[in-house]
Image (cartoon, rainbow over all chains, first blue to last red; front, side, top):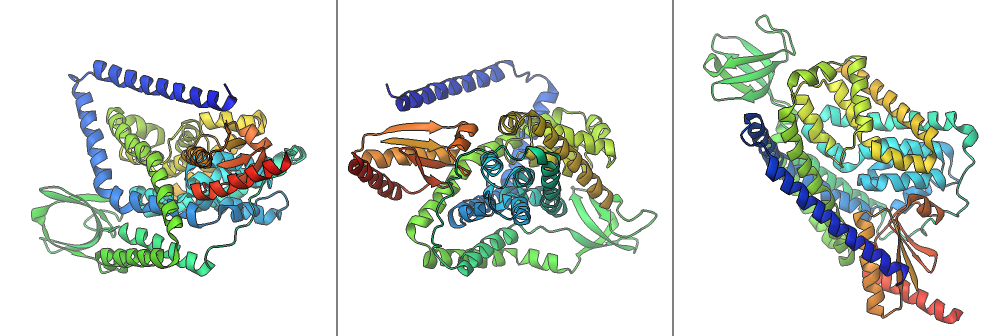
Length: 447
Length: 86
């Protein structure tokens, strides 16, 4: 038996065991699930409710287009050309800058982060740029940015991307400075950089294609901020953000002081006390009402460009890459949403609030440390943060968790240790925790 | 012919392995498929981006999954080089 067939056979055997383990797990769950406990039934309901919310609000407008963009990124953008800037002979400043932002192209899925990290460290530009990439990569992949902005709000999505890039630079420099004496140990192997491919189309075509693709997602994703001017039955008037509507009353967040309430406070008013609610006339809301036309226009433009500029093999590859991401990420995301819904219903609110309920140093540190050690399956950090937010987590710690979470976890610390040694791994983890804490505190203070 | 698929076992690496096998079978080649999944070994082969493919120990594809047609071209080139070498 050759090594090859043996390896295939072993893979097949272990995958059968995996299937069996899954079956046993589901069986045990079904057998022991305490359905008579009202808390458990409520949790199951909450799990389905959250799943439905994702299915109705985030799937078609956000996850699906984002998967197509992710597929397009690895099909139409040359990742090899980015890697050239991270090669062994590249200029240091360029290497740091490119490493901090290239996650958007190189880390389309978090599974590719570690190999690329190891590649930059051992074969390419070295420890500093590699650490920068490792910190920012998972946070600025396209799917993560859009889903964060969509689910958790625009400002935290933006901060996640910008914070990750800015602090990646700092972490990279610090790592390189701390370990400047040990920079020599490289693998002797010649880096096998792929030969530069002749671009299939001029850059402007690729650029317009991606602009339209992203614009499609931005418009279809456009969010109504709910800015309204409320007139009350008693003749008063105030500007606010509509938060929630039930059968009998509505909750607003005030945008100006009104009737003894301060700006920013949440007030709930009975509907019978309201004389009228008018949408504020801002461009954001104007775009919101036209979003389907704008998205449709962009969608048509993308279709037209695909038809005129791309050859069929490329389009096939794009669809295949998109499908690969879908198979990889969708079960993780929706499974994650379901599990998060179930568990979050069982966690007492006071417990979360007491740990991470404010923007203090302690809350941010707790969020960073938990995020650093806990393993988040790709993208599940987002529903987790959303659930924790509902349970009372403050925005600062949430950002800290989003930054520290996907950058390191216990399982990938083990891989990092094997690539760069225990000491560097520990220092890197420490820096991630410190940086995430600081970013969280700044964000929390600004909010 | 020795075909090495290099990558930590992500979906794209599996796709590459599958395509390589298909290409080799369609060409009727005698081949041995090896998978390298350990990061250290991947580095030792000089691969910065996965998935990658080495034919008879030389890295030919880095960081992408070529189509079966492209792989067939690569494999038949390598097969000819092998013949010429003997």
